[in-house]
Length: 103
Length: 267
Figure 1 (cartoon, each protein chain N blue to C red):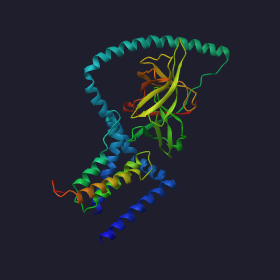
Figure 2 (figure 1 turned 180 degrees about the vertical axis):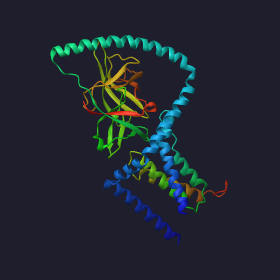
Figure 3 (figure 1 turned 180 degrees about the horizontal axis):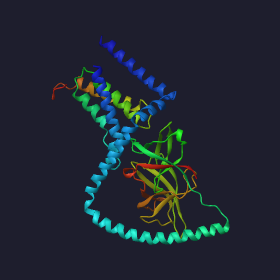
Figure 4 (figure 1 turned 120 degrees about the vertical axis):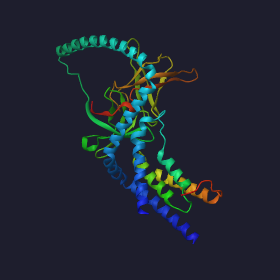
């Protein structure tokens, strides 16, 4: 479990660095893809609803976004965590057909 | 059991919110951010340079079609500039002699602090630079490129890093002018529109501005030194209904090809 958490932390740290230092050079009209948001959404969609790694990913992803932005710490954490919770809730309550095999 | 878990989750969420509120209110977020910036500095520097190189490579492929034309245009521009430069050198020499004759010491140079760009904020109108309060950086200092094009001003200072708010940030507005030789100068206000876009507003209706006109800073606002390059007029929006004209400005600074910036310490 600790290994998985460490991998998530490292993964999102690398994504945040890529997003703020590498991808900014490839912006189209000043817009760059938010890799962290995309990853958080994908992890939460493809994860089993009872698992909590998606929420943890949202928390860590939001933390790194906050660190490398001008906003106060907690802004992105709350937004991403809310998105993760919302996805989990929708999948748990309203999605009955399992289209993909969740990991 | 389910009720217990719901209550537990709610308590955890409230605790997390309280924790962040306290963290920001007592000013602990600054050292936390500073720690991560110091930790990430070498990686970010490498990534920025790599990204810059790769984007330059793709840009050159994308624009290879126009390179020949561009080269011709630049060569002719270069010739013009060289002759202009020779003329200006002569004028400078003359000016220096006149100054000496009048015993005036009007030539004031900016005191500059060199800094490297480390990262750019995802909201696109903030950048992080590698100098902070330890290097004498203070809030509201002007940040320029090597070509003396205005980039922004210092927004937040850490020990070894500073955040720069770009002039294209929607919260930024300051006085600017279009310098004219023959007629009166045109004064207006530069406003940031986000995503590296700028507008030149509050231009009187009776003044005539043209595309490619250069916009520079004035000393009216007291934020930036006068005469710094801002950008070129790209598109003019004139309407009889409005009391003022508005123009879109193409900023001179480009973060794509910039690694080094200068902070004006004194002017």
